[in-house]
Image (cartoon, one colour):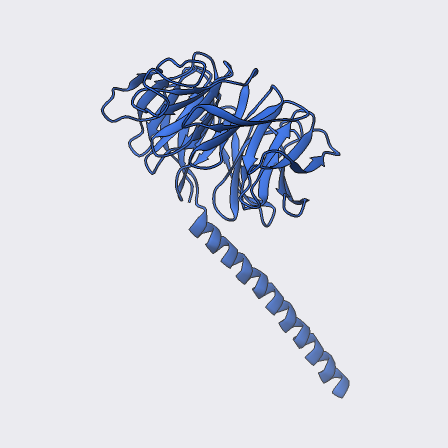
Length: 358
C-alpha cells in the first residue's frame, strides 16, 4: 500500500515539476513577445526621398531636423526629414564625393576623388536651395579668408590619392585617411596640416575611440593600427588578421567606448564586434548575405544592411537578430539613425527611405 502511494506521489510530483517548467517557458515566452511588441513592431515606410541621380553612398545626421546625403552624382543634399523635402544642394565637389562629416552646427567636412578636403557651411536660411562652392587657393584660404563661413570654403590640400575617411578630433582639428597610405591631422579653422603618419597600406577607414586618446586606422594590407592622437608620433599596438577578409572592412561603427562593429563584403556576411581595450572579439553576427553597412541604434542594438535588399536589427550583446526588413529595392548602401524611432536607408536605386521601427 505504501509503495503504491509513494509511486503516485512521485508521479504527481514529477507532473507538477514538468507543469511548472512548461508554465515557466510559456511565461518567459509571453514576456519575450510582450517586450518584442513594445520595443519592435512591424516596420512601416514613413517617407521616400528621390532626388539624387545616382547611388546614395553615405548619410549623416546634422541636427534634430536635418540630415545630409552623398551620392555618385557629386552632390551633397541636405534634407528636412520631418517634412520630407530637400532644403539645400551643395555643389562642393566636381568629382564623386567619398566621405562627409559634421563638424559643428554650421559646417561639414567632405572629400572627393579630387583628393581635396573641403570645409563648408551646410545650410544658410538666407540662401537659395543651391549652393556652389567658392574657390580655394593651395594654402587652404578662400576668397574671404579661412575663418569666414558665409558661402565660402576652406580647402585642405596634401593627400595625393582618394581621401576615404575623416574624423573629428576636437573643436579645431580633424584627421583624414587616404589611399596614399597616410593619415593626416589638420587644423581645419586655419587650413593647415599639423602632422602626418604613414601606414603600411592604403587607409580605408579611421575612427576615434572614446578612451585613452586613441584612433584606429584600417589598412588595405589587412592590418589595424591603433594610434595615440595627442602626439601622433608613436603607435600603441597593431592587430594582424588571421583571416585576410575580416581585417579590411569597408564600414564600421563604434557602439561603446572600446567596442567597434565592422565587417567586410567578402567575409560571407559576418559582422564582428571587437573590444579594442581588451584586444578580443566580443561577438560575431552572421548574415546570410554580404553586409554593406552597419550603424549603432542604441546601447544594445545595431542595424545592418546587405546586398539582398534587407535590413537586420541586432541585439549585439546577445548575438541575435531580432527583426528583418526585406525591401525589394536592391542592395542597402548606407544606414542612419535619425531618432529613437526612425532610421534612414540609402539605396542603389538613388532613393532614400525613412522607416518607423520602434
